[in-house]
Image (cartoon, rainbow, N blue to C red; front, top):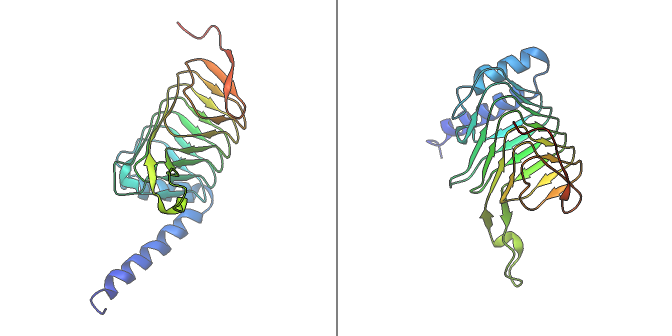
Length: 204
């Protein structure tokens, strides 16, 4: 037990440090978070703004481009013992309370010029529930993927489920639950999300 004590003290200090860093307000907080976090991410570009209250798990499995804003209290998770991965391109804005969750083997890739509204949830893995005689919590998870292509807008309170690709220029309406692929330049909405219309005049 004595030999483990220094490690326990170090871990406890680290938890306190990161909690204090997370809640530090204002521009000073943003600057300090960037100065520390940028060396922890797998890749980190320039002009990354991590707002107050953001929770990030497993920095080494998260790769960031340039000009990214994480809104207040957002949660970016990529923890586990598998091939978890989050990749975010350039010029991406996450509003408040966004969850990007690639825990337990998931993979989430977000392209360039993407807008994600408040309270959006992207969850790349799902519970296994095939055995009715075993509690769901004991059946493990099935890893999956989510791909958000360039120039996509996801409205407030939308949920994107595993194994979904949202094509280039797509729009997901507020409150939608996306369970299948969205074609490029399509507008979808509802629960589950369905095609509403196609944007015109976008393709060169």
